[in-house]
Structure formats: structure tokens, C-alpha cells
Length: 282
Image (cartoon, rainbow, N blue to C red; front, top):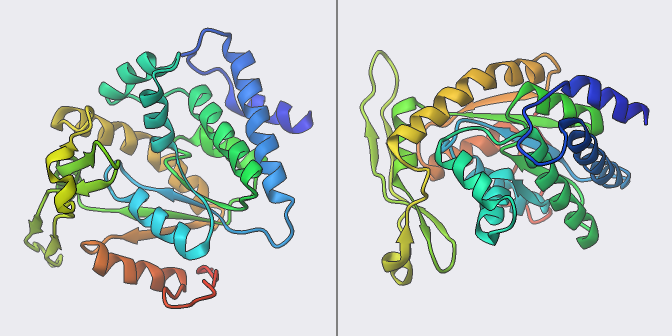
């Protein structure tokens, strides 16, 4: 109960996007998140508890998924959770669609509720540890997370703005297999001492070419609005983890082949290790 009281005090009042009162919703979903993470943390020799930060379109999902496979821990993307809820056409789907299509942030209550349910599923499957992608996005969310678990490492991915916009506008999803691809070919000349950046497209296999669709929120107007909101809210989150000695800032130098190897070096990880050593950078 003491933990819950601290969480409610930290959260304060938030804009209610549900039908119940904000306090009731926040207490309920924070309690569920606390319970799910507490059970996960009780496992002796637990797996990593890592977080990925970065602007929309930077590639958090790609690198988090690769590390998830390498370290044998679940990759939990709040963006995927939201899209799954949208596809389910449940009671929240229309509300979420309006928020997402405008490039706005979804309320803490909804995000934490979706995350809590995913962590409960992880418990049922016997999964331990996690790599979070897309949460926390605000200082309030970071404080909630800090109140219920101990995050080991926060990886903050960075990419040039012009490359970010091009990547977001080039994103495609296969309507059948749900695979993620990108048709953008990014080639930015180096200026003022900065190196040239080349990011080749990530094209789909032939069987998916005719089934590619664009996310409804991947328009230039919405992408720029998302980047603006993210930049306004991300600085306090970055400083929060930086002050705790948990932030690893990583500038993506180019496409996946180049960036992946350098990210592994920064994390002191070896992709060729069959035992998947989990020694992160201090």
C-alpha cells in the first residue's frame, strides 16, 4: 500500500481518457503494473530490465527486437500493444484511433493498463526480464516505472531529423504477415565535419510486395507533430535516467548492418556467442 500511495502522489492528476475517474483508473492500472513487475523481479538471477528511448521512427523496435532474441528476453513495445488494441476493434479502438491519427500522446492510464496486461501474459508464459520499447515517454511514466521496478539500462537512440522523417514516411507493413519494411533510400551528405549517412531500404520479399500498406499516422504532418511532442517531453526523461547513471546515448551512424555492430560494442555484447552473454556496458 505504501508503494501505491507513493505512485499516486507521483502521478498527480492526469487527463482522463477513459469513462471512469482518473484517480480510480490510475490506482487500478498502477497496481496491476506493480504486481506484474514485482513477480517478474522476484526471480533469482533475473534477466535484464532494459528500456529503449528515441524519437518515433528511430528504430527502437528493430534494435530492441534483435536484442530480445540475442538475450532471450521478451521485447515489449507499447506501440505494438496500441496497434493490437486498434485492430481488435474493442471499446478503446475508436478513441485510440483518433488520438493516434492526430499524432497525440495516449494517456498514462491506457498505456499502463495495456502494459500491465502484457506483463501478466509474460508471467503466465514463464517469461522473465524485458526490453521495453516506447515506455516511458514522459517523466511521470518514468517515475511510475521507477516506483515498481529497478531498470538496469536505458538506451537512448538518436538519428538526424531529416533521416527520421524520411524513415517514417517510408515505413510499410505487410497486411498479411504484418512484417515491417521500409521503402526509403536515405543518402545524406556530410556537412560541417559530420560523416555521410546512408541507409538502404528494407524491402519486402516478393510475396509481400503487393500487400504493403502505410500506417494511417505516417503522414508528414503527423510525423512532425509526433517529433515535436516527443522532443518536448523526452528531455526530462533523459535527464532523469542520466542523473541515475543508467542512460547510454547512442547515435545511429547509418543502416542496420553498420549500427547493429557498433551498438553491440557499446553494450559489450557478442552476437556470435551461443550463450548470449548479457554483460551490458557499465
